[in-house]
Length: 213
Ligand code: AMP
Image (cartoon, rainbow, N blue to C red; front, side, top):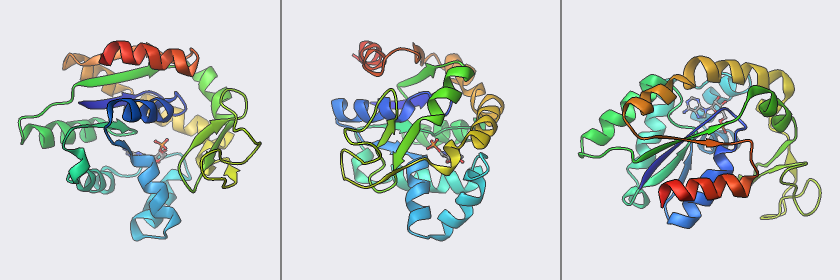
């Protein structure tokens, strides 16, 4: 099963993608996590990506596509995957469609998690992340058991640079300009499913399971 998660930054794509991956036994591929791992490891790709990410901009398609295509080539992707944060532009979506078409494959579902901008701004200001294992939390809606400490690996939680208020507005603008057109792109392919992302995380997940079966 090949699934794409769509939605504004902070809509809950990552959280839902992780639950989907666990339930259906497919890998969760987050381009944001891959970039952050590269930044942490000080790679060339990480250095290039950081400059864009810190400003709330998208990393250029050339850098992103190479990285994703390498990931798709790995063995665990044979039975499908859930993509979180990719594609984020029409050229990326077209590249994905073309790469899959080479093996007579297509994406099965594009799930759009709809959340209004005002709610996104409120959510992102409370978001905390573990840079060691990639887990994400929210100080109000999904708090860790112990404040500022990751439940999974015990590392200190931080507010990502790109979740800072000044960057959030920029990311929303970028989302509306470059990523939102994907909703229409996948609607035309007949695989778009929309869920109400303002609901509780577990309710959103139930709705998604109802779609995926
Ligand atoms: P995320 O964790 O998905 O919110 O991604 C964090 C940041 O990584 C984004 O704001 C972008 O700067 C960058 N990024 C992640 N995925 C992509 C992508 N598919 N294309 C371009 N930039 C991306």
